[in-house]
Image (cartoon, rainbow, N blue to C red; front, side, top):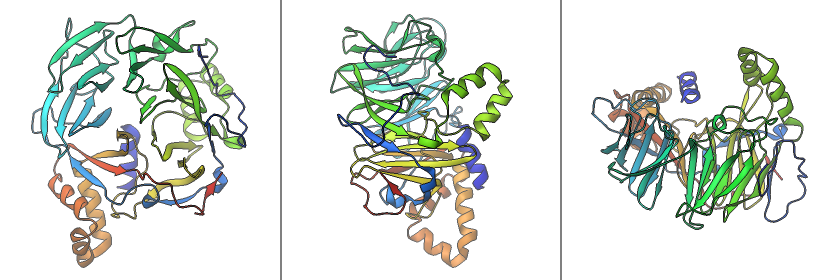
Amino acid sequence: MQKRFFLFLLLISSVFFSCSSNDKVNSDEASDGLEIIKVDLSEAREGKLSEFFESEIEYIWLQDDSEDAQLGGLNKIFFHEDKIFTLDKFGCKCIQIFNRSGKFLHKLRSYGEGPEKYLDLDNAIIVKNEVLLLGVYPPKLMWFSMEGKFLREEKLEKQNGSGVFSEEEKRYYFYNKVRGVSNGQYFVESVNEFFQDTLRSFLYQEDGYYGNYSSQRSFIKENKIYFGRPFNDTIMVTKDGIFFPKFVFDFGYYKQSIEQLKKNSENLSSVDELDFINHRAKLYFVPYGWYVTESQLYADFKYEESFYMIFFDRNAKKTHILNGRLKNDSDESIDPFSFTHLFSTDKVGFYLPGRFLFEELQIKKAELGKDGFEEYVKGKGKNFAQVAFAAKDSENPVLIVYTTKKSSLPTGQAGMTQ
């Protein structure tokens, strides 16, 4: 079952400033609040969930009895106030809205051709209590009410990917998809709340290497807006439409040569290029499993055939490099392998179909024996067991939600580096 769980997770420059992947970083110096994350895999250790997250874990079963309720391929899940929004771009091509207990409320679906319709969508955000669809094809922005009713739309010259709105700056930031950008154009465009005062950042360079990764997680919205790009060691922060470097990964000896990846894309077959990425590639950043809070930055990495979780304690300026999964010492249910969904500014996690969660509970039962299992489901495993039993026959997802710790991690723990 552990292997099955792992496979499930796997399925599911600038006008102002630009840091390329080849920029040299002095890991002993920092200025203007720059935070250096030094990664030395020789210091990797085992880690526990309680080091980085609060003890209580939420299990939320998304219950929907409608005919198209097979919520198996959700691209984005996020919380807003007392609601949960799920975006499915491959199945229903819709957004479903639930309350925080997992009860279905509304559906936002406007699939079709012509005005007020879309043939594809890739992302969604909440702005001023309205749902704004992004990555829409044909290219346009579309606004809907919180109950899924169409409000208005605005045509675009080219299709965007991800986006975010900063209430503090009163600005939108939109990321143009790699395939939609050509020489002399920019990856990011920023406008004010009235869609004026356009600023452009991160010039596309014909000789650059950009890969073909989704831009959905390029922006992280905390109390500030953070921006990361594939194969770039520098994560930026925004201020009034301008990007400034905030975090730098110093991979040292373990860094993957971007020039090598570029040569591979030019000279290797697709099969051989994939084989290199899966088995021989070194460290490089891709904005997929990552998040930023006031107290920590998290990102997961693959080095050759090994997986690592990296937590950076922003208060103590310490890096924790962890081998594979975190040991769940909170309720002793599932050991998380990655945090693929950013539900809100301090809540992250992943999801499993209900029947998969129940299978995990059965494994726990076999491990503990009858008496131990009865004690477990009445004690620390109560929440896990209740939802697993309720959703045991369901293909619908159960969200597994972890709350990040706000305070600094204890100093002096093994495996910390500066």
